[in-house]
Length: 387
Image (cartoon, rainbow, N blue to C red; front, side, top):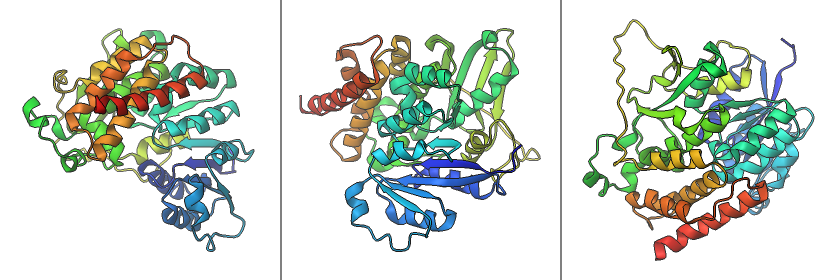
């Protein structure tokens, strides 16, 4: 182990993953250092983080908001960079050892791609990157000889459990889901869901977009696609199981019938810490299970009639090509409309299905073609609600 701290670029430092990552970095006893931070519009929080962690670079991607903001308290020795292009500039800087990609949505694609191009390992909390361009991203990481380290609790669990066997010995990957706030709702009850109810997750504290994805279980649909590319398995080797306690974060079943699981309290600091310190394990700030207390672990299959998003995830994972990018963009647009009160909760998945089924499928799209399809899918959702 080197005596020098690992230099981390935290992209999306003011979000839920970014703030927890900074907690992990602060508790690392000097092993990790927050060398670059970025945010879009939460500039007050970004400045507070900068004053606490003293990075060498800070990026404000909303240039108009940043130019109107008072940066007079910015510490000396900290360079301010403005605009989305600055993300690509900062991940390429020589001192950066690892990039934490925690920007939510497809806007995180370009900076993650550039980090890999520059030979930087990426701790990936932005599932949309692999959903949109999984084959391109994994191929680039392989060509550059760098790791794509999963930060999602489910994919981190699988990544850890896979170390119990060889790739050819894997039979199934089982992604667990808490089931979200509506796991016990009937189809009729789901037709009455309000925005406030959709934003009340029973287990995790997340941003509004991810919380709504959990309620529709579109988050699991996207995780199916992500797992397909991240772990090199087929779509039919990936299943989802509802586990309300959120203690077992995912499981790997091997061909001999052995099942290896990763268990811990629902605390995102653990998978973040594992990715940032990889390949080492170190003591940290994450909660631990109390084995002196009784514990019940329940598992059940999700109802496809109530959660049709799961089949869309399998469909896109089987097809590959342009399907993931279109599904992801359609979902981002539909969720945004739901948050604005322009789309009902039960219309999110049908809108996504309509756009996915109607798009001109491309088998081997380039990154530029995927970006164009992303834009097209968002426009199609807007047209769909007006139809």
